[in-house]
Image 1 (cartoon, helix red, strand yellow):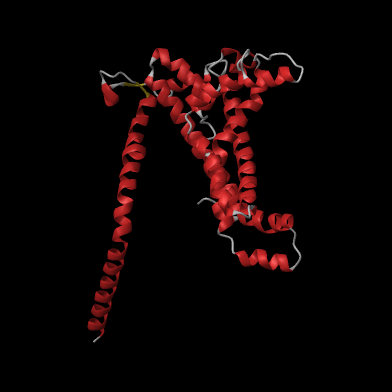
Image 2: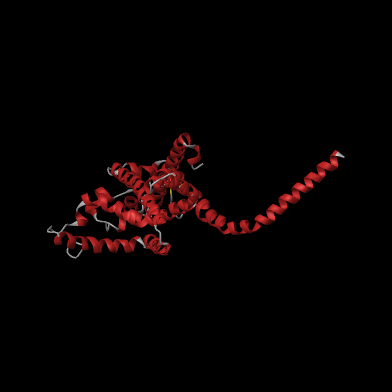
Length: 317
């Protein structure tokens, strides 16, 4: 009797699991292209990291090339500019994470306050559009803005009684120009993520606050921002993973690769590109990329561990 009962339960469990599998089949089929993409472009290429530890020769192949250990990593740290490059890369990334998050949250809150929803799509399109503009095009835009004779900025300066500024020869201004372009390019996308989170907040919470006499600022400070905290932390943690990777287009095309600006615009990616463009040393390039990835992994794990101790629900994993 007990045996038949167990068999019946097993058959019932199998039929239930097969039914759940059939229900999920559509989702599984939809996920297959994404899984294939990640396998082909993200996981299979990881085998190539072995090049970072070899004196890679195309004729000898990846496995036939001589093993040199950490020799290729000297390319990054033997340079006199290594300290400046690392500082610029980390400085701009941290500044971008903070400023983009602050501006995006502010824009998301302002969009939520828009009463006439007919204008909302227009605002969203205007903010999101810069994300689709290539950095090459933005580089030409920077020339239009900062050209010594015909640039828009110099025309404004002269109109206000000043003199023309050699923007592409004066490093001090680019500590502000670079973050400004970074915010302009990315704030639209991130603001939509925060706006989506705000739209998911139960409206009854705001209605209860209004009944209690809460002002608009009070609702933002005591309801919206606290409920956005987890999203802000997760977005920041994901950005920290690229702390050693700068946006190549931003730092190469916007300053127009001006040598006079290297002190404040040169980062690891642009330095590696210029140094390896002539030599074509794939091993050193792979070593630099591997170093950036390892540092990013350490930063994500470390920051996530700190967040997990402070607030477990806000951690990424």
